Amino acid sequence: MPKKNVPAEILSLDIDSLSIDEIEIIEEIIDGPLDQLAKPGARKAKLLRAMAVVIKRREDPSFSAEDAGKLRIQFKSKPKDPSKLSE
Image 1 (tube, one colour):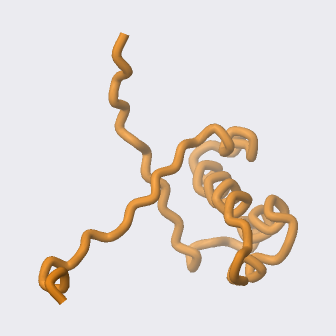
Image 2 (cartoon, one colour):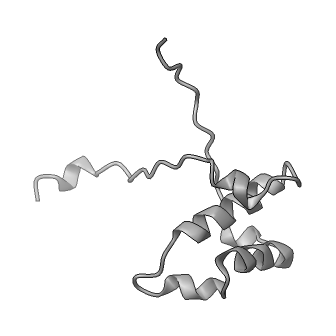
Image 3 (cartoon, rainbow, N blue to C red):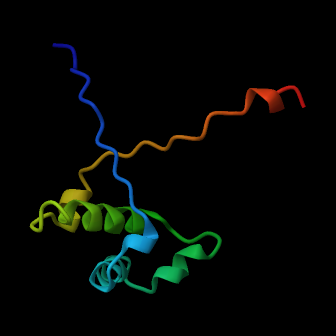
């Protein structure tokens, strides 16, 4: 049976919208300070999980870090500016 295309849920997080509690949740999940992720080579998977937890808990307080691990992600790049393709 062919797989049905289910519209992807887009999760968006504005860092400036985080509460202190949400920052603490992120730091607990990543097991360190938020600014450590700005370092080159820093692993990002825990941050992705933590951000998903924060976003989803805004609607469902029972959403867990384990639940976040089941989410699928898709990285999209911005469309290229056609005027700069010939440069």
